[in-house]
Every structure is written in C-alpha cells, then in structure tokens.
Image (cartoon, rainbow, N blue to C red; front, side):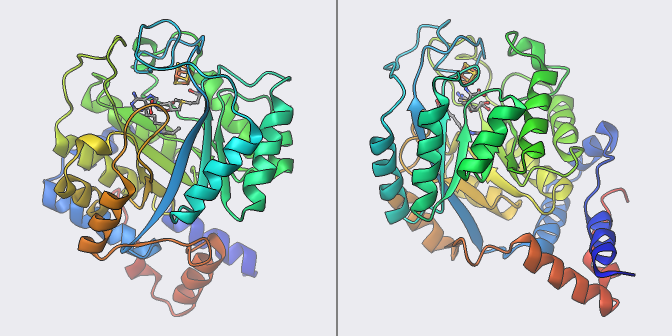
Length: 358
Ligand code: SAM
Ligand code: DTB
Ligand code: SF4
C-alpha cells in the first residue's frame, strides 16, 4: 500500500460521513456519564485534552442586515439595542488584530452583517485579510453567502478559514430564516471548500428546536466530506427585540450532550464552545471541555453580545490546567496522520478507534 493510500485508509477508519439521525439520537440518549466517557475517549485519540484553541471575533460591519435570522441583533427587521456601523477602516481592524494577538489569540475572525459581500466591499475585505495574515495570525471571516469567485479572491489574499453556519436542522430551518435557503448555505460551504479554504461551520441550539433537530443538524455537519475543520456550537444569546427573545432556555445538560455528540461524530475537528458562555458558570464550561470542546472565542465581546472577560478565561484555564494552543503546537493534520500511520504500522489501530455505530 502506498503512503497516501495508507493515510486514506486511516482517515476512512476514523471519520464517517454516513451518520443517520436515528443513531445520533441514540448517542444523545446514552446515560450522561457514558456519553461523556465516549466523547473524552475520542477526544484524546486526536487532541491534547488539556489544550484549547482561542480565536478573537471582531464585527467589521455592524447592523442593518437585510436578512431575517430570528435570533440576530443585527437584522434590520427587528428593533434591537445595537449601534449600526459602516465597514471599519482597514487600519482599525489591524489595530484590533494586534491587540488580540497580544492577548494570546491565534486566530482573528472578522464578521460582517451582510447577506453577502458586494463587489465594492471586496478590495477592503481583501486588504484586511492580507494585513491580519501578515501579523502572523490565522485569518477567518464570516461575511454571509459567497460566490466561488469571491471565495477564490479571499483564499488568494490569505484567508485560512471561512465561517458559515448551517444554524439548525433542515427541518427546523424555515422557522428561523426565510431570506436564504439551506441549500444556499451548503452552496457557500462548497464554494469555500472548492477555493481551498478551511471550513468553519456549526449552528445554534436553544432556538426552540426539538431534540431530533439537534441530532439532524449534527448529521448535516458530520456528513459533509471533508468534515468542517472547525465546528462552532452556539447557545442562543437571547436578544431583546428579536422574535426569539423569550424562547424557553435549553437545559444545560442538553447543551453539553450536543458538544459531546459533535466530538464523537467529528473526531478531528475543533469543536468550539461558541456564543453563550457569558451565561454559563465555570462548572458548565468545564463540562463542555470534558465533553470535547477545544476552542473558544476569547475577548469580552462576540460580534455585538458580551463574552466573558479575558482575565476570567485565563483564571478558569489555570484552575483546569488548560493551555492555549499556539499555531505551532496545534496537532495539525500532518502530525496527526504521522501518529496514526505509526500506530497502524504497529498494528494497534483496532484499539485506537471508537466505533460509534456499536
Ligand atoms: N451575516 C453573516 C451570516 O449570517 O452569514 C455572518 C455573521 S453571523 C452573525 C454568524 C453566526 O453567528 C450566525 O450564523 C449564527 O450562527 C451566530 N449568531 C448570530 N447571532 C447569535 C445569537 N444571538 N446567539 C447565538 N449565535 C448567534
Ligand atoms: C459563530 O458560530 N459564532 C460567532 C461567529 N460564528 C461569527 C458569532 C456569535 C454571535 C453572538 C451574538 C452577537 O455577538 O451578536
Ligand atoms: Fe444578517 Fe448574519 Fe444576522 Fe442573519 S445572522 S441577520 S445574515 S448578520
């Protein structure tokens, strides 16, 4: 067997793209301790369990969005308490990126309240990518839907990741957004992948969806081939003035289960404990890390909503003995595939992989 086909065999053995909602529901239904044990076991096969990747978010264009996402503070359709802002100047974005780097972030994620970027915006956005990249940070953007051509331009400028969430299950989707389709989202993910960028895609829970919608969302994400490198799991931040401001809270354990199941289904992806940490106590966040979350947004603001202060996160990491990932010590695909290949040669692979179907 050639080296590349060995690597392919390893990948096929550990990552599945044929999940069904029924079997995922069965994972959700496991006793909590069994689920946590499985998730932690899978996590340790692919990552240093005491390392968390940290990204910083910046809203480069805030509010006045034409879309109708029912959770969002930035939709022009709802009366919310945010200040609208035009596209930020490139220099100001680079200042914020320098600060993020100084605080220990390794990735800078720039978000815009757009349905999609207009051609007139592209030159500025491309300058931002080049500038942030030249600071030695990983670059990420979330600008709405992209055409293949725009994805190509961003990739050429040095964009590492593009964030575009599926948000919820295909079944629940029309209750949340009517101005773009699920297929539009999948097409954007195709454009991002086709241009050679890494995919950051996840969703929001606590939107009033059913348990099977959470399973169905994870099936959509895990059955993407390849799976997204980064999977943000957002807990809804309830925003006054939006249609979802009064939706019933999701039980904390159901949220932690979601992280654990995502970890089992997407064993090589970074699962991000994303929006909603401000409302979670330290114990809940710790259970999310135990369930396999290994990425967070760092810094006191998300796009418009509050996030824990950096100092609070540093204190929590210290209590838990967690280190932040540096770009260099990130277990990248190459290192991981070398480790797995070695294990195969040693004929230990049978012990390495958890088969979630059993
Ligand atoms: N406008 C672009 C788009 O929607 O494609 C990019 C920015 S948008 C704010 C990025 C993602 O943030 C959304 O898809 C959603 O998953 C998440 N998000 C937005 N508002 C949220 C909220 N109130 N609570 C939790 N997650 C939220
Ligand atoms: C993602 O999944 N979550 C981030 C990022 N991608 C762009 C956004 C969270 C937004 C939370 C609400 C707000 O700040 O307005
Ligand atoms: Fe606009 Fe993005 Fe908010 Fe939807 S989530 S309203 S597209 S900013």
